[in-house]
Image 1: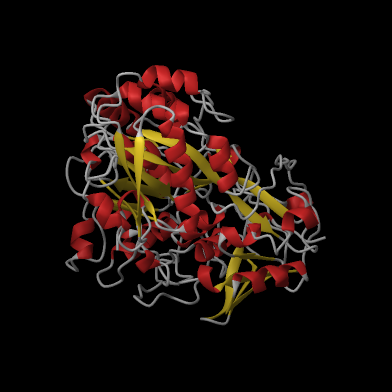
Image 2: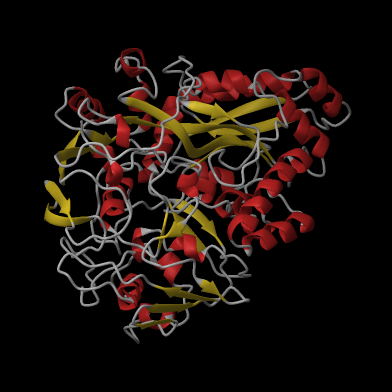
Length: 581
């Protein structure tokens, strides 16, 4: 089930396999057709709402890690996953959960990658197997990559351009049903492969160390797409399998040495790896026998497991006492800025907020974000925001547009005077205690500016359908992390008028911002980040179609065996660079 604007569907929560929820959107520059941006952490949405229940009211100032040093070499790093965060596949063409991607990050060699560095450098793509950034045609439809000649698969065979050509075609093979096809289907000739008429897309050609990819439409962020496991180098003879391959030769720092589905995975060093990614431990042993989240955290604390993935709210439960026991960002318990946004959509298609910028701004000035932050677990669990881009993303500029500490009621009341129209607002929100509490805070905030808010608590299952009817004035939203780090999913999908009825829940319709957003989507590199950073500030300051509240943080717990010297959080643990004491 696809979820509009990442609204939660409880039907997805029981699933331990591939994620079925995400953003639905058009490709940049595409007037019709759709791009489905899959979400690897849909389960974390329910965690986000649980964290919002005031489970922890301790505020802490995050520390900062220094640059990682070489640290201890060798040893076995032990990993486990909770039953809510299970691995689905190890095959790069099919893997689509956070657990799977965390392991494939250590296994894959990709054309471009995110560096093993702390933020903000962590989110600026750099060449990996590619010798440099690709050569790009003026129409942004053709990308030419030249590969380094130093990469080898674990069996000694060199990594040539046909390794990436085959990886792309594996995602398109008929019957495989790869989630990566949402990206690769934009390649010329992809439709022929998806339909079974051909085995290779005509838009991908490989000659030695030269890879050329031709796209149907302009895509400025294609280099960022190649950071995903779907584009992981694979041996050109690796079969396509709808069930997924359990073993294959890799060209990254580690090989999959053993895999028993549902039981264990063992990763061992690729002795022929000559890349520059830091890698210290000898092997990773991954326990796939599902544990409850509290049990997993207990095992980490007792040193039976060195790291694992569990829903975030479990890290902040009072009975875990992780903050009191370890502090924050010191030795074992870490909390870093994440990419899950919380806010309130203001429906600009309804009479209350239509052509009523002053009232939309008044709502933003009236919000008590500090109190709402406490509802999310305090500063240790979330960061208050008045903007739309994640603060960790390149291009973000902290403009301090609306108050984060306490409401500016004088300003809010001045803006709202004569603009409240009916004086009534329908609020849609999940009917969970934790989110209903947020609704009560909002109700009190807006009462001060002359708005009477009627809170409609809606069951999680029914929420997407009710929001799609567009009969709300205000709606609570949570947007989970996307597959790669780029401003497009956060701004274009939320504010481009082409996505009204899909992900543009505020029905924001501005020819001016349509032009600016679409222009930014076609920009490369640093100019792209700068343009989006400026747009983020403009949208919040001049139009305010969403009242931003906070970005949730990403918690990490490691055992006492894990060395701080090699700790890199992006914002989850970079296991490739990890080392032991």
